[in-house]
Structures are given as C-alpha cells and as structure tokens.
Image (cartoon, rainbow, N blue to C red; front, top):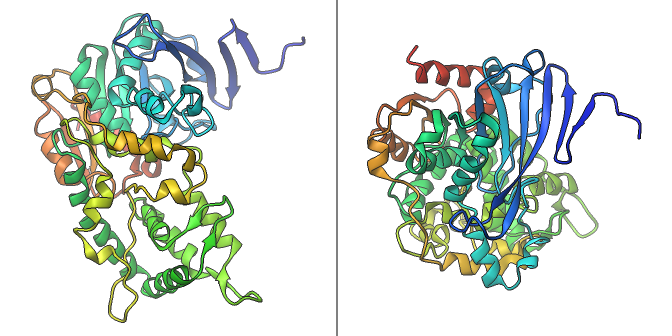
Length: 443
C-alpha cells in the first residue's frame, strides 16, 4: 500500500499526522477496568498527543488535559488554536478522552447493553468517576514520561479530577492548573443544587435585563408546549421542563446572546396553527441532546457522591424547594430557565437515553461510593496549584470553590468576572498564561 502523504504509521496502535504548526499522534492504552484488580478485565483508553511542529523531537515536559463533563471527550484541535497555542510553547500535550468518552471505550445506549442487565451496567459505570480517571492517568504516565511527573490542566469536571489527583497520587504531579473546576470537598449533591438554583435565577434575571422581550417570548413557548406536544428533529419530546433546560446556555460567555437568537423567531405559521419552527427545533436539540454524551446525565450527580448516601435524583428533589422554577404562566409570574441539572424525566423524553433509564435509576439509589478527596493530603500538598475561579459561575459554586482553595496548601486563585465558565475557551491563551504565571509564582 502506498504511503499516504503526511501520515506515518508507528506500530499497530500509533498514527502520527500533521496539521499546520502541529504534529499529532494517536495513542491507545489498555488499562484495567478496575485498578484494584490489575489482572482483571481491561478497557481501551485513547489520548491524542500534540506537539509544536518544530519541537516534535525535543524532550519536552508533558501536560495532560482533562475535559469538563462528566461524559465529554477532549476537544479535537484544528491547528494551534485557543489555549493550546500557549501550552505548546513549553509542553507536549496529551488530550485525553476520559474512559467512557470519545474513543476511550465509549459508554452509550449502543455499547452498554454488552454488559448485560441494567444492574450490571450500573456496576460497570461506578468505575467511570474521577478516582478511576486519575488512576488511568497514573497508569499511562510512566509509559509517556518515563516516570517523570507531569502537569495537569483540568477544565470544570476535569478540575474536580485534578483535585482527586492531588488526593490520590500527588507524586505524579509537577503542577496543577484548574479552570472553573474547584469542587467542594464535602458538599453532597443536595448542597450543590441548593446553591445552584439561586444562581440560575440570577442568571435568568440578568438575561431578561439584557433582552427585555425574552421573558415574554419564553413564556409564549412554554404556554404552547403546555398545550401542544412538540418533538425535536432528534425525536426528543420538548416539554416545558425540557425547554427550561435551555438555560444551560447562560453559563457561557456568549450563551445569553445565543439564547436570545434562539427565542426571537421560534414560531412559524402552519395549516394547523402556530408551531415551533424546524430551525428552532434543530438548534434546541443541539443544546439539549445527550446522544453523544449520555454519561453527562447518568453520572452527573454521582460526581458529588462520597458520603454513603444515595443521590436519589437530587436536582429533581431540591427543585421543589424553589417554587419559582415551576410553571408560572399567570400575569406577573416569572418564567425561569434551569440549566446545570439532570432529571429522571430526561430518560423518558430523549430517545438516546431511554434504553438507559433503569441503569440510571440503579445508580441514583447506590450508596457505596468511595471518597474522592483526602482533606489531609490536600492540606499538606507541596504540588504547586493555580485555579481560575469565575465569579458567580453557573456550573460550579464560587463559595464552594473558594472554601476549597483555602483547604489546599499553597493553592493560588485568580477570581475574575471577565469570563464565564468557558473562560479557557473564550480567553484561551491569556487564561492559561495567567495560570502558568501564578503557578510559577510570577504574578
């Protein structure tokens, strides 16, 4: 077979290729499903090595990037874009697809039935939390670095994983950089959502102040959905509660504008009366669908579980403590969006989640979750840590983050309202540079 231009095969498991300014190498690793049983079943893990084209043969330090989620793979780079451009000035970067995501033994409605019953699927998925992700990193680190510690950059849930890393295996870490992902060390899911709903209300009211007509537009859509069933192009049922979930956009830098444009032309005339347009439905489905990331729904509340109690659909239960989020169509009532929450009805309204409904229910009742953080180790760590904390972050409570910052020895914070939760994407090079200067004690 002729050699393809720009592609070099190195063994059976490695493919190297080029983009402008980059050399990228696909890397696969077989790791234990359960690191407590290293001789047992193994799963396939994938990471994309990225290095600056002119430095591909240099002995550079490694930076491993842990994506937000849970349930999302690392980004797919196109050239030296965003924060990656700054990282490549001094690092060889590994963009890791965390287990169950992307090319790392994906866990979806299509693959999970291979595990057997919902109960067996749930047992399997208990090994897909931060503690297992950290042990995956420690398993592959010596194979890439020769045993040297590396730097971790954790975004959102990736930051949660980084704090677990500091708790379980600080010897593997040279530095830790966290953006929008300092978790509470002891808050259970109920405490997380009691803090989240008031933030969501603040974000909604700020959005309506920016776009005064949007509350009435949202109310019209909600009233329509209360009377007529609408199905999105992906087959999902758009209920009032599902429509409210579009508030997840309000946690990103451009999300308020995107929500406004989504609402402004929602209806079209049809022979049967006004209906939501296909254009609206397609955009809404792109925001709401979890077909490609079911673990975001199934394991979302489990990332907070470590206290011996079941999460038991915490966000759904805690919502009842905030009646302002219920359906209010009467004059003078507010219509509020929700966002960073998962609910049992999602397993009914989204076709890609329906086959996993029982699996999710079993996980919601589970009580034997292992601890994720070691407060004693964090208080005594010598690993340099820097964290960007976004003021009034929709997804991660600022007060929780700052309390944790005070519990990790030497951790330096950059608290800012210049960016929302996606500051690493929006601010890119500048955000990473600021954290590197902080962690190197140059600020």
